[in-house]
Length: 249
Image (cartoon, rainbow, N blue to C red; front, side):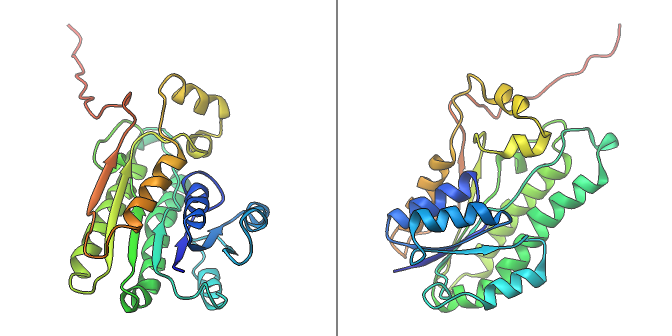
């Protein structure tokens, strides 16, 4: 039985990923900040299938403690799913909250690279895999995206750079770059359930389960195959959005 380490497992893509992997014969280390949600996940899927590790990914000391405390059966990680991430705010850069920027950088960039570096020796030893959840925001920019878009561009390219560095090790590396996925993402970004409902209304957006199914497909491919990167959007979303501002006449 293989073991996956899934960050951000208390909601959305991460939660769906843990459920999907366990349903297909995996064990999972599920991480997140909300103990009650992790406890519910263990109760739902079984302590023999899910180990809950409650900590903030930005806290390196807590991360080290969680890794050191992995019980037998969960310590041999075969797959790292770098899913934890967030967006804060939609203001233009000149009006943005600097604390929001620090939160996004610390979560989407720093925490991801720290965890990845700490697990790399084990993943190389086990000829495992890394799947990172980037975003189309790292490729197609939009007003108010600023640091979020920059952090996801980093995630996309850091993951591809890992692919280059891990050449010859047998470790598979994939960057998944989704468009609109209806989760708690927009509620966290705006602080408003109404804003989230308005954004996704009529779009028929992707779901956390859609991305989890993609993760499962990639993770269970034959070991000689690597998906370098995959970009997904709902049919009703498009990447063509160039705008023109016209000077007053």
